[in-house]
Structures are given as structure tokens and as C-alpha cells.
Amino acid sequence: MENQYYYYLTIFFVLIFYKYFFNPRRNNLPPSPLAFPIIGHLYLLKNKPLLTLTSLSAKYGPVLYLRYGSMPVLIVSSPSTVEECFTKNDIIFANRSRTMAGDQLTFNYTAYFWAPYGQLWRSLRRLTVMELLSSNSLQKTSNIRDEEVVNFTRSLFKFCNGRSRNVDLTNWICTFSFNLVNKIVAGTHLVSEEDAGMEKGIAMIERLKGIFFVDIPVLNMCDFLPFLRWIGYKGMEKKMSLVHNQRNEFLDNLLEEFRQEKVNVGNRVKQNTLIETLLSLQESEPEFYTEDVIKSIMLVIFVTGTDTTSTTIQWAMRLVLAHPEALHKLRAEIDIQVGNTRLLNESDLTKLPYLHSVINETLRLYPTVPLLLPHYSTEDCTVGGYHVPKHTILLVNAWAIQRDPEVWKDPNEFKPERFEAIEGGKEGVNYKFIPFGMGRRSCPGAGMATRAISLALGSLIQCFDWQSVGKENLALSYNSRIKIQKNKSLEAICSPRSNFVQLLSQL
Ligand SMILES: *[C@@H]1O[C@H](CO)[C@@H](O)[C@H](O)[C@H]1NC(C)=O
Ligand SMILES: *[C@@H]1O[C@H](CO)[C@@H](O)[C@H](O)[C@H]1NC(C)=O
Ligand SMILES: *[C@@H]1O[C@H](CO)[C@@H](O)[C@H](O)[C@H]1NC(C)=O
Ligand SMILES: *[C@@H]1O[C@H](CO)[C@@H](O)[C@H](O)[C@H]1NC(C)=O
Ligand SMILES: *[C@@H]1O[C@H](CO)[C@@H](O)[C@H](O)[C@H]1NC(C)=O
Ligand SMILES: *[C@@H]1O[C@H](CO)[C@@H](O)[C@H](O)[C@H]1NC(C)=O
Image (cartoon, rainbow, N blue to C red; front, side, top):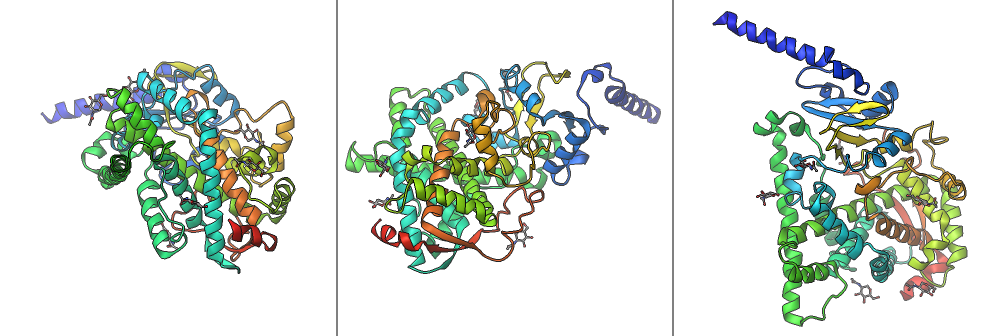
């Protein structure tokens, strides 16, 4: 009995040894460090996975092949390999894998950004691109954004009460983002103008951040080592299901309120809201627009619309506070193009190239999703001359590409001017600037997000003087700080510009 046991154990290890060290197919695979049985390369990724992946790519090249437990993962980190993945192989990499976060948080994979590549995804894409994000509907929502900026600027002005005041910019910016998204979705505000910046408003925003900005990785240990899921590793699954329930309840409430109001006031309320569009689609196509599909569409708008805009506006403010020359240049541009007799609005944006450059430069240094969302291959293919088997996860290290000294001059410095030079040249930023992803699975909301970011940042610079608090803001250490610490607010001293007081008090 005992002998037999050792016999099988030996066979087992010989097979594993063969599989990982002498497998002839391995020769075609992209470069890869030494892997251990069962855990694969997970031992490398214990701390700071993004920095570890970046340094592994620097060592092994722009096509890196790792095994996260049972899951093969391809990591690309150069413009040419990105191009190869999202042109020649775009369809092959267009799928998403099943993961624990997907199971728990995406309304059974009906959420647009996580839907498997296929009919459902195509229908959702048609809806988002045609109904919500076409230039026609962007035009329709431009009034909403302009009005939101007016209300936001006015409440900040009232809060300052005619003098310099220390403000928690993180909270203000989140208030703007949540109010804007809720306005587009449901036609109402989450934080009223009187509450903004006050105890009640701050508490409200903290609660919303707890629901929507949760620190849940899209891939986690349980996806790589499935047995961890059975034993309930770190309560991950429980935590996710709790978050999902909170979001579900929030969305149910919005829908319920809307339906109630429709009964009370009749058909003419709150037109031009996303809920109204979705509910009328539900009436005509009830089989497709189930309650889950409707909620998943609202969820996507909330999650992507609030996080990207608020983090990017915050990083941009941090960066211009640390670079007064950029702030002055930006303000001079706005003063010349818009003046001080009115607030900047969406039709001004085409005349403000430096504002766009500042935002692009911010997104280059601090992309909101540094590894983009994981793609998943449906067939074998080749990348960089290497063989990539089907059912491989693809991670695109946008962060590394956007800070690669081979691709960008002085990559760690904040220099918005670099985008002005690119704008004129014919080379463009293709495949080296990819904050919103590439190919058919890229983020269709990029245009909408950029507009909201430009308006909010532009009006903060146009109407107020800013001073940083303490030294922290001035000494940004570019390489180490990849994510804003969730509990660390951006504070600054805000005072209305003297030649804007008249305009602001009339808003
Ligand atoms: C996409 O991935 C899902 C699971 O992640 C799988 O069920 C589906 O078959 C895949 N689609 C294609 C076209 O391979
Ligand atoms: C999720 O979708 C699959 C098929 O797409 C279906 O079989 C399953 O019942 C659904 N689960 C839930 C909880 O709706
Ligand atoms: C924004 O301010 C205007 C008045 O300028 C007001 O009519 C409107 O209701 C406010 N919007 C929201 C959503 O509070
Ligand atoms: C933006 O401001 C300009 C100049 O005042 C004005 O002509 C234009 O109508 C405004 N756009 C919107 C959408 O309000
Ligand atoms: C900003 O980046 C986008 C690509 O995402 C590009 O289309 C646009 O021209 C850039 N803007 C400027 C001012 O460089
Ligand atoms: C923020 O959180 C980190 C750990 O997550 C902790 O070390 C730090 O003390 C916290 N800072 C504040 C201001 O609460």
C-alpha cells in the first residue's frame, strides 16, 4: 500500500516536471520566469503586482507569459505588441473570462464591460453607442453637464463665503461626479446644493464611495487557485456579495422612485434621462430588457462614470497645484477664450487645446485602470512571433507603456506640452496612449468622460485661486504613488478670483 503511494507520487512529480520544463510546445511560448507547480508564478506577485509586472517586462521583454495558478496570462507592454493584439488579433482577444468578481458583481455577466463576446455584447454595444453615447445624445446631455458645472461652481462659491477657505477637494469633486451621473441616469441630485461640503453631504458621499469605489480586484487569488474559493479565502466572496446587494438596492430605489413619480405626475416628467429611455425600451422589447439588464446598464454608467472622472480631476488638480507654470498657462488660455463675464461651457472646449493636453497628460501619468480590464482569448494566436494558446488572459500594461522612456521623452515628468507637439505631427498617440483601452472592447464612454473632466477642471481653474496645503502636493513622487490612497483626501485653499466675484454671485 505504502509503496503504491510513493509510486503514484513519483509519477505525479515526473509529469509536472515534464510539463513545465521539457514540454516541447514551451519553446514557442513567450518568455517566462521559472514557475512552480500548482501556484505557477503567483509567488512573484505577492506585493505591488503592477510594479512587479513592469519590472518583469523590463527583464523578459514586451511579451511576457505567466501562469497565475491554473490560469495562463499574457502581459504586453509595448505599442507594437498592443497594436498586434488589438488589430490582427482583436476578435480573438475580445472575450472576458469568468471570474469571481464577474459572478458576483455583473448581474450575471450582463454588464457591458464584462459581457462575453457575442450576441448580448453586440446588442448592449448598439444600445450604449447609439442611444447613450452617439454625438446626437452627447449633444442632448451637454445642457445637463453645463448646468451641473454652474450649480457646482455656485455651491463652492457659497461655501467659500467670500474668503479663502480650506476645502476637501476630493469630496467636492466626488459630489460633482455623483450628482452629474445621477442627473443623467435619473434626473435628480444625490447631494443637494445646501448639503455640498457640509457634514450631511460629506457623509452621503462617503456612503456612495463605500458602494461604488470599492477596492475589489477584478482578478483575485480565488480565480487562480479555485480551491481557495471553496474554503472562503479572506471572505472575498462574502464581501463581493455584500457590495452587490448594496448596489442592487441603490439601483432598485432609483427605479422605484422613477416609476412612482411617473404614476404620480404622468408621462411628462424627467424626460431625457437614462431610466426613461431604458424603461421605454423595456416596454417595446421586454424579453431583452429584463430588470437585470436595465440595472446592469445603470450600474456600468455609475461605476465607470464616477470613478474615472473623479480620480482624473483630482490627479489633474494635484498636478497643476504642483506645477504653477502649467496652472498659469491653463488659466491664461481660459481667460483669453472665455473671459470673466461668463462661465466656461461645453461649446468652448474645442477652443481650449491646452486644457485637453493637461487632461491627456494626467491620464498618461495616472491611467484609471493601469492594466486595463483583462481580455480572454478564444483561439490560439501569435503575438510578437510567440505562440499564445487559447483561453489565455491578456493584460495590457498601459501604465508601463505610458511611462516607457523608449516611447516618451522624460516619461515621469508632467509636461502637457508634449501633446501639443503630437497633435501637430502625423504620428499621433496610437498605441502608446491607451487610458481607455483599444479595439472593439475599448471604453465607449471616453468622450463623455473627457467632457465632464474638462468642464469641471476648467471651471475650478477659471473661477478660483488655489494654494496647496503643506508640502505633500508639491513633492509628488511619480513612481511610487500609483493609486490615490482611498482615505487620503486632496485638500487645498480655495478663494474666488476677485474679478469673478460678480459673476459668481449672480449664478
Ligand atoms: C467567452 O468566455 C466565456 C467564459 O468566460 C465562455 O463561456 C464563452 O464560450 C466564450 N466565448 C467564445 C466565443 O469563446
Ligand atoms: C445566469 O445566466 C445563465 C445563462 O446565461 C443562466 O443559466 C443562469 O440561470 C443565470 N443565473 C442567474 C442567477 O440568473
Ligand atoms: C441647478 O440650479 C438651477 C438654478 O440655477 C436649479 O433650477 C436646478 O434645479 C439646479 N439643479 C439641481 C439638480 O439641483
Ligand atoms: C456657451 O457660451 C456661448 C457664449 O456665451 C453661447 O453662445 C452658447 O450658447 C453657450 N452654449 C450653451 C450650450 O449654452
Ligand atoms: C488627447 O488624446 C486623445 C486620444 O485619446 C487624442 O485624440 C487627442 O487629440 C489628444 N488631445 C490633445 C490635445 O493632444
Ligand atoms: C489610511 O490607510 C492606511 C492603510 O490602509 C493607514 O496606514 C493610514 O494610517 C490611513 N490614513 C489615515 C489618514 O487614516
